[in-house]
Length: 319
Length: 319
Image (cartoon, rainbow over all chains, first blue to last red):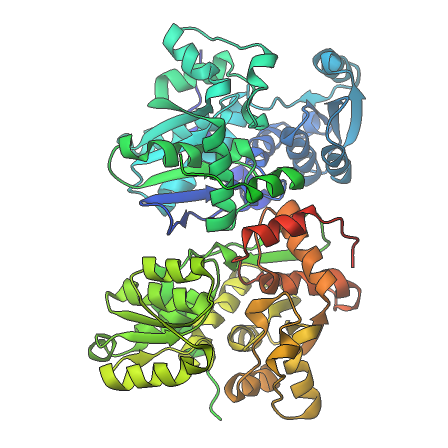
């Protein structure tokens, strides 16, 4: 399987420059040697605009002009809608019945045509629409151009903190950690890149232990509050992770909630549970991390206000 | 009265570079032509580190070595403590009885010696300690070096968005808006700089109408939830504002709460009420602002978690 290269990530950085927020690295007073990469500050509230913008931008103009289609119940629909708008082309978002109304509305507000289907029809309907109209499918993580776009975060981290010792990355489908590891390990081989998963959706950890890609049934991964990382890796992302990622850490539900609360109260950042798991890993495992500065990617912030209010109201002990 | 100059702000930018977060300008999807300057991302959760770091940095080393003293119940105590730590000198924070425990603890955690006194003794005790030990007093806003430090925000805004049409600035003591207006009006005279106050603490608006500095009694300004901007301007900041600020807008308590909620849910930023009033002014008055892009400074994010939870749980209509 062909892996993406540092050059792919560097080309992506050039391509997406005008369409993303160049997020800073933010130090913390509440944790020793911890820096945050707040990707929740992207206008759609998550890093996914980077990959979508790179994938859409890389298309030949005449292909792109046919329109873009994605299927997603979450942040990826908004990412592809915004990327299509950036290039002035049509976007279609296939979303499952029962998607949060706010996500449907936001996707529509970005100019996308939203097609609501029964959950099991998402993929076939997407394929059918793509075939019928010539739309280009932009997948959420299982594509080299998407992975290269997410990797631009790794380039930025090393510009801002060349001495980074460890980079902790929230991991579901694995596009984010695959891209970041590609950039970071090429430029700074001694920096550790660690994937972080909820214990309740630790398919990557099990896949690496077993030696082949393992997926868990939905009723198992749905036990975690971290909705955005319930999905498992693909063969493509698993290949990148095997080659370039230094390890996997897992976190409990209490640790995730504690991280969401700490980010809001101590660093003034609203993170969704899946976006806070790298910080949770720092809080739970900092003693066992190698020496040097630690960067935790805060990958997204799309949390329902009542859920955030509930977590802020909890009295949580440290992990 | 001598006003600070653009050169003072530019020198401040050079001086504080290594000690602050270089915050980005963040566009929004939920408001037309609105950009946010998220100063709540500074490690102490507020812009005040800029002014404190400039004031402490500008001292002659042998003077600075005697130590720094401040009196504050809020963000300024942490700002001076962090600035003193940055230069490796002693900090003393005189704080009133009844200060929130978390603020006292955070100030101590930054290495400052905290002296708790009855509220009415804050200023005399600070003066007495300064005289006895030779400490240098760093005031929260009424000092040219503090104003110049806050002004660095204006330089950054124009680097990131040279075409900014209007800059909205939360205003209490007036150091922030004085500094920003100094930088912005010198570099881009056609950009409007507007001070924003709560209606319940609109001392600046009244001062400008009356033609002299007006202060309101504490029981009047304490009606606003926006604790960080309850204080009125000084003669020094009023002189800057008269000369360089284009106008004043005021906002209601409902508008402030709506802005706090919108920042958290739509832009993933935790803002304190006083830090959200520029956004409140945009939401309430955007129709009457001149054409062009609008920048709202989000000046701080130190809000009690129960208060934030309460606001997130509210169903608020738009302003």
